[in-house]
Length: 267
Image (cartoon, rainbow, N blue to C red):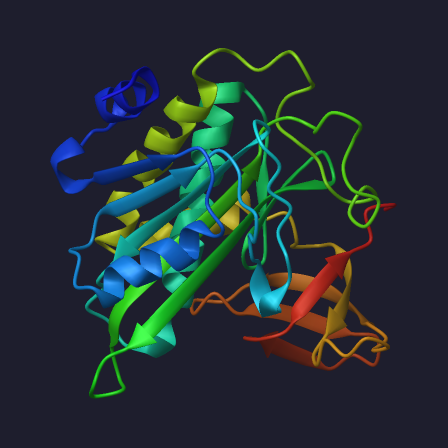
């Protein structure tokens, strides 16, 4: 076991639950964890890469994963719950990641519905939960929770396609030694209690407390078509099923369970 593996395992509250696979490079940590799930591995398999060559986000988008600047991790899970409730895994991960980032760095990161973390108006983290249905079609045979966090800005800055919205926890050269490993462990430490009580009141309470959207003006996107114009709305709150309650300009209200919103940070 090398030093980085020891740092992670020593910082875990439940090291016996985790089977750690630490890699310098991976095409996609989610793909690797999904393969392990297909091969019958028990939940708790955790793959972490220093770089991804084909990192993915929601809707098939690419996720920039340059070497040495981020934490890219995927955790194999075997949840006993309806597949329709998979959003709760994403919500638990968002809360756990925000809590871990803030506890270890002193930052004030918040959750942007449903799967991003924002810090100082910029996205620092994306979360992707992928479920594979079992033979009955109602419950996942397994799920893979992928988390990508920008720890520092890449040398030369972020790619032009994301430079206007991407951020990082630390300025270049300021990240403490071992932070990446301690953050990975702390996310797992905070995630597991929520994961084991996904329908409990505490998860929803913390999600609401950490949400950056209530009271904000947003643009709502439904189809993700290239030329789709966002529909202006105001966010009223987070519902019990983690839907986003919005009020459109004509006064109608709706709970969004799918789709995407973008913030008007200039407010």
